[in-house]
Length: 243
Image (cartoon, rainbow, N blue to C red):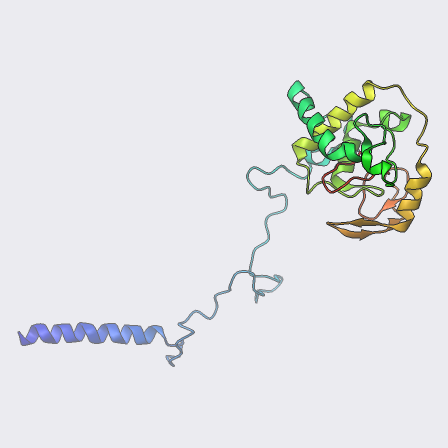
């Protein structure tokens, strides 16, 4: 009986010693917080390893998340080898055009008009006219141009990338081609002076803030705001798209 009690006492003492030892530093001085783990780095904290600013490891260059397209994919960039695509990388079907018409009428027509003539209701209330899709320049523009404008914005129109999905942008761009084919060519943009004046005053993008003209940006043959990457002078409300 006594032997059993002594064994139990010995086991309890061993557990207590082990617990106390776990709270000691490497020189066996008690420090409850350390527990021999001072070298551990917390997520996103400053790194003590030379050449690294953060404990978090940067993804390998070119890493793409599951389900995400590469930034070089023409579906996302509307470009192949740096040039805007001339044909949609998304198959143009009746269903796609129907979707494009729906999204265009909802988000683009308020400025661009349902016919694409730049005479939407917002314009009739005093907003600068966007160019008519039937002018020669836009009739000859590659389809990637319209996707690029919706993605990056230009002129008095800001980016719609946060509001319109990639698939819907291609649907709208394809539907614009339909609008262009249903109307004859019209003279060059007669409202160019409005666009120039609007660009000079700057554009207030509700997402990206105030954008002012950047004369050095001539990626589309004309000076564009610093945040813009496509040629367009139109404007759209928050749910609109630019072309």
